Amino acid sequence: MHLLNFPIVDPHLHQWDPLNTPHAAAFLVKVFGRSPVLMDKVVRLLQPRALMESLGLTDYGLSPYLPADFIKDCGPYAIESVVHIEASWHEHKGYGVVNETKWVNQLPFAEQGIKLGAIVGTADPRNKQFSDILAAHQISSPLFSGIRKMASYHDDKGVHRWSDQPGLYADKKFLAGFEHLAKTKLTFDAWAYSTQLAEVSVLAKTFPETPIVIDHLATPAGIFGVVGKGTGRTESERMDIFARWKDDISHLAEYPNVHAKISGLMMPVLGHSFHKTRQLATVEDMVNLLSPLVNHAMKVFGHERILYASNFPMDKVSAQLTDIIEAYIKMIQPYGNIALEAVFRNNAKQFYRI
Image 1 (cartoon, rainbow, N blue to C red):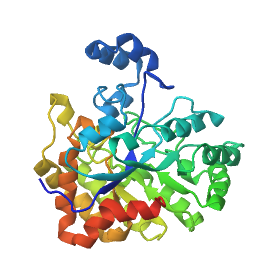
Image 2: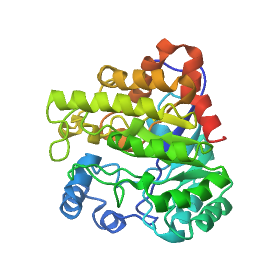
Image 3: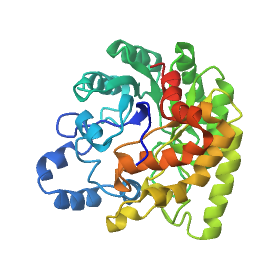
């Protein structure tokens, strides 16, 4: 195992507790929590197939994931601090989203020997009360750093749509509201599929002073195998997905206010099938699969604008966190020790002002 000689800052961690907080699956967890197999069957009957395929397994999404769970997954790797990224808090309308910030702010990270460095909540710039909701977030915690509003919307109806409309980041109402975020100097986490990178470029161009990070290298759905109703069905189609991703993310990288997270690259929506046989990817599997994506991102963003992040527990269906960290270390090591410390620690601290 390759260990680092400095502690990691993880800028993309999801924390949730379906048993004690507003959660879409709270009732099911309370009723079927002692029978995970039965609960899985019930959830798959009630939820859209596209969502289930995006998650891969329900094991982790329906179980509490709290600081003690995360630190256990980290194994021997030293963690300095983490950034909580909004996790579809069920009170998602109006001021309800502020309650997630309040809840995360009181979680016992210190008991696990790590620091909560920042909180990224959510709010909808299209909401007329957007600026007041941002202010409420800031009042709720001094660690509130910014928001994420997911725009992920794929043309393939079988690929789960995390947004209620296509083209969200280029929407006039969204852009008008986003001006309030820009004035506050808060950060913005953008999550869109790779087919939507032009929208993120519009956002970056319109608000050049706003720090923007594209989550999960823009999630090229189907790049490793078929997903949805046929995305990534053939090798030729997967090569086209990669080629378009390379071109579009290269264009996005031209905007100096944009950073990128190498994270979420083991989610099933990319076309991974490890979860289907309850297998986990090895370090070698991940290095072989992900190196083309990581190397291109390093090329166009430079080591100064790339952030390693775990995206746990979402990637847990495909790989152990210790193996994910080791795989990324192997991919970044050729760029030198300065790049390693930048990607695994310094860039996150600078971006989120930790």
